[in-house]
Length: 621
Image (tube, rainbow, N blue to C red; front, side):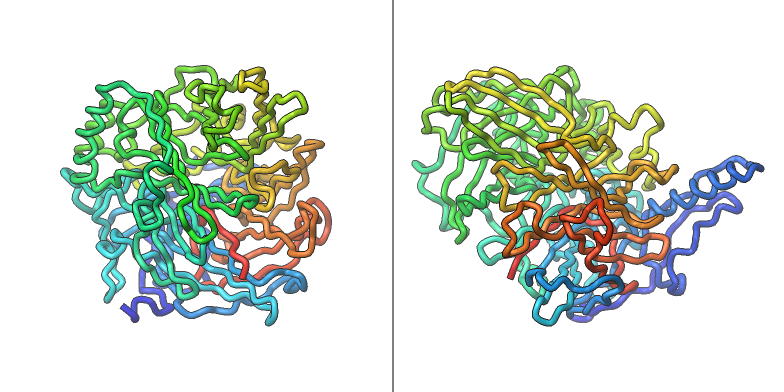
């Protein structure tokens, strides 16, 4: 096991199918070919012969763009159990940068050694840690696979060989057992990371978090969020039920089937959590496994204090079929955007038989022209919350599928009226597709960048940053709800983040990943730009990477002695796929849109170059 943890790369090769003549991929890696990590199986697109210079440039860029996209999802089998000092290649270590660790998690492996590929959302969790040592003015890097139960089964600890046995919700195994394979819920702990109460966790959408030992990044095992010794007595836990009897019967039948056959956890914890800095509380949310197949949704909210003691929990049963990935909170509410779904009978039959991904059992439900927003009482005994029926959603005037939430806050006027604002990224129901996220084609196991880059006239369907305003009177009666662009920046954007000290409170600034639009063949995704939005005057400013270089989610790091909301730094990982390099970039948040935005850039060693990450967390020392 120790040998498998050593920092090394196993001899592998890039798996591709035959490409059309004269369309070989560009050279990406200075290492010998047998040192290139495994990638998804891919084929360059066929292009017609052209003669003009402009057409030739367009053809070349299309081919390069195709391969650039693939190399964002190259598997990385190397780990480093010992810290590696990153080389400073630009700028200087900022003199006022706090000591701490930036954790970034995401998928690390997409292709096994037996011909199977998986959707990026099903890739095994790969945790990266960038430790900032302010005293010695250096950054150290570590990367380890999270040793989940699925990882232990699918990876040989002695040889490093991988063989996928779990399908995962978004994948079908071509090189493994298809028919009758009930290993679906593959908890890969690859979506987000959290440090709270002195403990480090990696989370996934659909199961218990995995606890990680800091600073070694050893996996300690699954963490039982609820039901432990810190669970409060029953009379301290609120529960609200609104459901028909036949749904309760159906739920009781489905529970043992889903858990016993498909190994689904009864409580599916969401990967997105919230931190109430005012009360020093961690807020986590779960849903019931059987609600994936029933026309209702049960959500339980848990609040923990700084010592990880459960302070309160509440369950809400909503009479609508919803799928929630991210959510919001204010001083007195939990807020859910009603992403509406429905059961696909034909798709569910194919999924159960292993002929299509399990997610094909569900499809979007665009039957309503509006977007329901549920305002759930965080403290139900408070006077305003007792007056309003939370089961009746607020209807936002436009239809929108919400992906991520940057912030939400509420303000009460002198007359007692309540104003709630939510800042989020949302897309059209016409574009969002469970089975094709990131352009993955489960039938071929390949990635198609065109799904994330639709043709002209369709870009308005892509994710963009919006602001939702809700007004109610002092008794909680609905007055008005409107939706608008968050700022003058109108290009597709996602991953909105803020200064966490303002979480749940009124904020001015939002930072997000977006695209400059300068790449003709990849105009919208992958992202190559950080945008800073001013929600008050609705202005925006940007910083962009170099050519054929992309970024992931930005994260804001506040300066300890700076009281200004934007007084700090923005961290973002830069993927220079043409050079097969990763860099950690430090930006001055106050200088975004101006000169000298880059404070420092640190290079990750080429042999530890990693695929695109999902969500990160800054943990100060």
